[in-house]
Image (cartoon, rainbow over all chains, first blue to last red; front, side, top):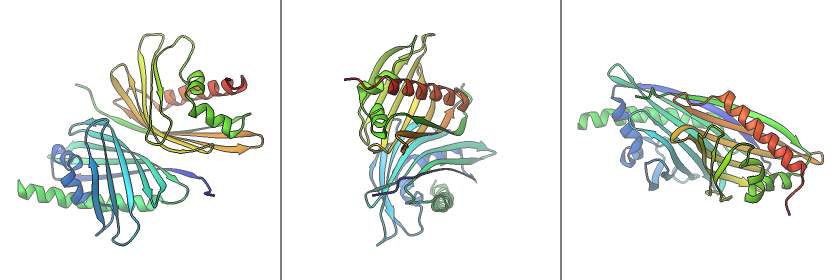
Length: 157
Length: 156
């Protein structure tokens, strides 16, 4: 029998990008962009089974190291203000176990000619299957890749 | 134009109920039971209450306050472990304005012959429309209603 536990923890991570809030918002709201930057592990696989970016819609993705455990994340979008904010709730499972539930807020704030991004992850870690340090590392990896994504799309434009 | 803002907060309320974990769980899980403590308040007019209590299922409650403002809860169950745990996310509207998005965990643990309930809510309050202290006060009132419901015995 599983020993049940919930550990609540909030992570706040901020970055400033040389890109407008609308460009950063676009990177959060299109599947093709998310496939390039929204992967929390270096060299991991990431695929979307479903993508429906609208209030009441959601997405389902799978990610993980090649040959290693696969994580499945199911997200519901609750609040979307274009170029301003996205609030969503997610559930993460791995090997049929529910390991994490969260509320994620992304705020896109005009800062000079750029964008200050504030990500707040209010998480509930379930039954000791996951931990805060993994999520801090995952967000750091993703938001570094987002910087490269924004440079890439700037060159393309 | 609305000034956009998000205020994050977390609060926890711990209660002891003189009822077994399965009775406390049933008060959350069964629509006719939950309606009695959760969806009806003196002076308020309940307009719609639906409960699809399963992982991925939806709960919807629309209720008009004495001042006429309609409060709408629209939630989705993320995790259910019978007699042990319930996790859901939801948003709250006042009339047509979304005021918050929340993640709630309810933990039930046997405590003597009764149950210890740990209610934790992680909130994102939108555009200054609500505060953590108001939400916590409202939740304490709901958990009082649950105590009163459990004290009256179960419906047949």
